[in-house]
Amino acid sequence: MQSRIINKVRSGLETVGLKTHRHGSHARADQSNKRERSKILALVLAGGEGGRLDVLTEQRAKPAVPFGGTLRLIDFAMSNCRHSHLSDVWIVEQYELHELNEHLANGRPWDMDRTYGGLQILPPFEIHDKGKKKDEKDDGKGKDKDKDGGSKDNDKDKDKKESGSDHGGFAEGNADAIYRQRRLLKKFEPDLLVVLSADHVYKLDFRDVIDFHKDQNADVTMVTTKVPEGDSATRFGVVEVSEDGRVTNFEYKPKQPKSDLVLAEIFVYDFQKLMETLDDLAEDGELKDYGEGLLPELVKQGNAWEFRLNSYWRDVGIPESYWKASMDLITKKQELNLDDPEWSILTRSAQRLPAHIHETARFENSLISPGCTVAGTVIRSILGPGCVVESGATIRDSILFDGVHVEVDAIIERSIIDEKVVIGKRSIIGGRSGVGEKKDLTMIGKKVKIAQDTHVPPGERISPEKPKD
Image (tube, rainbow, N blue to C red; front, side, top):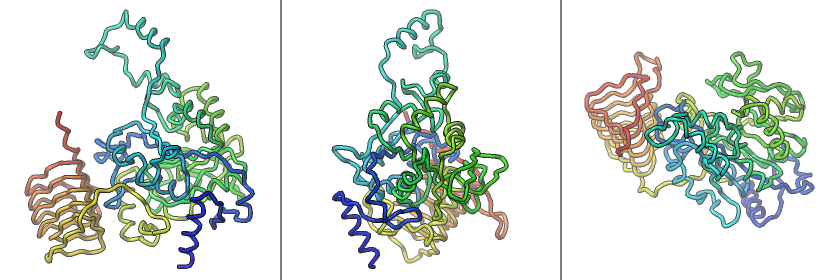
């Protein structure tokens, strides 16, 4: 209770601009008032297509994928920024913007809807360029046009040729995404740039990372963590570090990792050094992911450092990892406590009545969101808002998004069911072939209607219903 009161007092003091001491694995409380104030910008990279999440991202951006019943994946990056008192947060977007922007609500859920500073959205853009338009006009004289009046040249090929172009367009990777926004970034002129991904589940006070970065006078500080249980280092950037925390070696998604220490894709960059390095890399060739050119170059120069994250972290960019993180909400609440009032994960969600639990319902270790109506059995599962589970139906080891309707006597096992799906009577979705033998995840996309008495086998992927014209 005493620590909670102290934290509330500290938060209030920081709100009015008074610097207070923090306790963290790398905090330097006795030096906190001596540090020179820095202009800091947080940049959340939320533009990736997210194809590895399969049917869940066919019609939505990956950062907008629901999590834990009532949250979205981007809520973790945004809430960590809010609690870390980072007042300027920009989001780079590219794919399926509309649902993501609706959720962001101009930053209101995180108190970032401000007159000055706060949240800023960076969608794909193109600038006015007379020379470019003249060239296109000249080039078009001898070329066939497609039915829309444009050249048959592929637009994506043009973007590849203009990787890192300040003309905008679509980025070819996260380093390229940063560089394409360099005119706006240089106009803002931050001292430090905090770069975050939007598909990771974790809680972290970025001020501790920033303080450590300043103490080392680093070019880049990389947040690292041990490979999560059940995951593989081959999916990540892998680092080796010296005893004092300097990064001595970096490999990007190696086939044979030399270490189990991986990047959490949270970075603090010296802004001027970052821009200079990106300029040099852009001259030499295309900019893609920062693991392919940017980070190897900074590590080679010898001033890259690691900040170790020893608490819960998981990249949920693939279905199995997403499912495991969701199940951790149920089985590992001490490690992944999203109800902590001192560091809550904030979100935008519709106001719903409490869940209605019928007398025939049976539950075992599950999360049931507001607005649900449950008359069946729910075991080790997560139900999003407004789900309906009729009598005799069984949900086991599964995740249901908003508004899923499970009819009488249907069975769902080890599956992820997207929003507004209807599972017909007596249907079987997923399952196991024997006692204790787990099958691949079954996934069903948005608004699909499964007819009664249908069997969808384990591992099946059903794409969402196509939007009507």
